[in-house]
Amino acid sequence: WVMMKGTVMGCRKRLITLRKSLLPQVSRKATEKVELKFIDTASKMGHGRFQTSEEKAKFYGGATAKKARKEAKGAEKEAED
Image 1 (cartoon, one colour):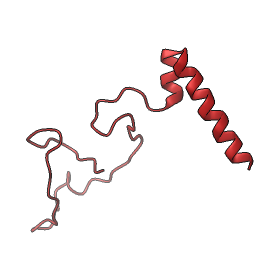
Image 2 (cartoon, rainbow, N blue to C red; image 1 turned 135 degrees about the vertical axis):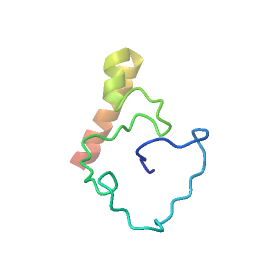
Image 3 (tube, rainbow, N blue to C red; image 1 turned 135 degrees about the horizontal axis):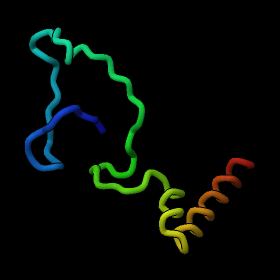
């Protein structure tokens, strides 16, 4: 997945061809250093709501919380082995 700054015309799932620039980019905007602080992993299409299953379990509670606890226990057992 590639994160693009700005907008791209067309529908969400439009194919985009990336190519090397024909001219050297020397503008201030083109040469700005990127400081990445957070990557949203909720959804690949950008319509997600929760970052982790624990966050979802905390919001919904009930069966979702049980599922998250069960997954956590499974991960702990694998880590011990």
